[in-house]
Image (tube, rainbow, N blue to C red; front, top):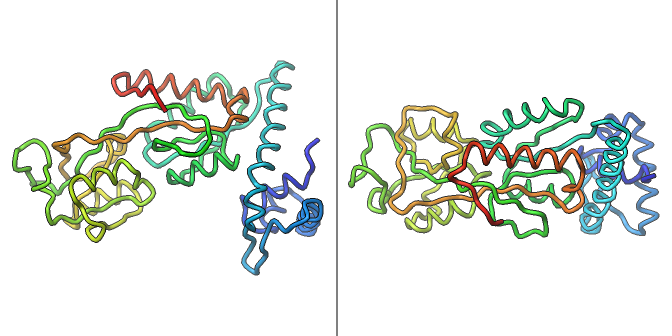
Length: 299
């Protein structure tokens, strides 16, 4: 059996305070404190810095977290395999995804998955690319959608290439009538979503010599569209982000096509869990069916 202190440690990291962790685990705050104190005694060093507002991981705690999480995930995998052997189909999956995947992909993917595996619990955490990769590395989420490449030592499945477009106020027409060029972009302000400001978007900006002082940041894709519609700047958004948002704006490709690469990341331990393997298969089938001409073959 996994020591209860490991579960307490992981839950405190997720919740940020001993009290919130006690509510989640249905124990008293003193039990949480006792478990953490015992863990720190066993390890020989503190794992948290405590304050009035909550707790933060120490540098040693940050090193321990992925190991503890891996132990918990191995137990989770064992439980799922045992349940399947006994004729049950149970388990849980935590998915991390950025906004446009949450809006356009996950609803049909999860809906189809639940038809075959109704007893598996699924939760979704919306975050930026870097946070998703880090949460997969730490074992806090099982599967993550992110922008490639990924430098961490994780299992990466390349999915699709997603063309990046320029969003302008209605009425603007490029000099060549069809694509946005460097001349069209000179002197313009650009509005980006900070969480989706990936390396491919940066490469596009660098190609067109857009300086950092020309950038503003907004909350989400729909907010970018609204700000462009109001004449406050131009936007740069990938095709996936444009599927279900609307506004009185114009959308043009760049004269030199730009793409971002979307991939799936998971850890070596969690990729073998039955529920996770089934979800990865479901995701790949969805992507292959809906984007056959945009599939990537390498991570």
